[in-house]
Length: 130
Image 1: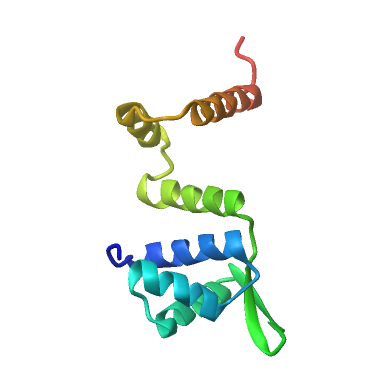
Image 2 (image 1 turned 120 degrees about the horizontal axis):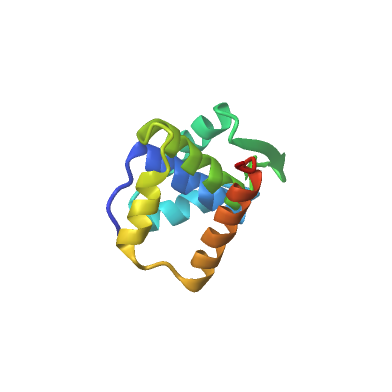
């Protein structure tokens, strides 16, 4: 079993799991998070309901059981989470992320390709300099 997740990390982990595997019932999510993080079913339900109250999850009854679904797919979910982190923790600056990636030095060819494409897209949105 890994270390317990902090509250914000719990929410993101649960949300990612539901985005990837949803629609899904609490019991199925609780099984995974009990095994991986030692979370009780009641904790998982609390996290899921908190996410639902924030508008990140929806739920509906299916065969007498509530199933939950993410409002966003995983790529959009991660993009939003990263944006919130940049805004909150880095005061909007992406330079620390670029520095981290350069220092880490463990970027796959696919990731490097994606980063190059992102830089091209950013350059394309800037007005031409005279």
